[in-house]
Image 1 (cartoon, rainbow, N blue to C red):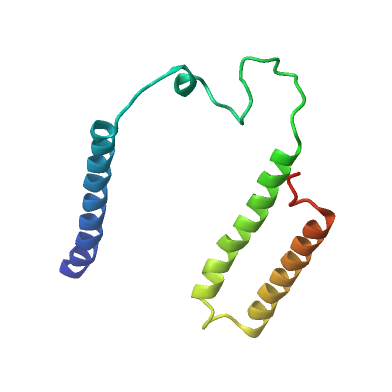
Image 2: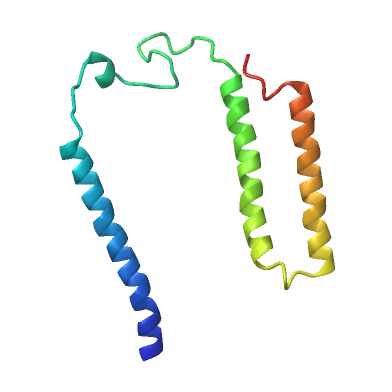
Amino acid sequence: MKLIFNEYFYIFIFFLIAAILSVVIFFLSYFIVFQKPNQEKLSAYECGFNPFEDARMTFDIRFYLVAILFLIFDLEISFLFPWVISLKSVTFFGFWTMIFFLILLTIGFIYEWFKGALEWE
């Protein structure tokens, strides 16, 4: 029981310091920073468009395309972390399966690049 308490005690101290530090930084940034609100700063901001126009106006598809591409390549990283951590215990099949996944992802990235999906203008 003492060993478990000792391990979790350090995690508790870490979370306690993180909570205290975040509260202190939050309140310091509120009191130290010079605040000068104006009409532009207080207005609602939504995707760079004025929110008071017609809701049925045309919306550029590039916003969605960039968001989807970000999600695809961001999820790749979430697959890589557990694989790298357990790389010593991964079998031959598991290693080459991930290499095949990375090759497919790289081919997809090159395809998107040549199609101009990453060009904004």
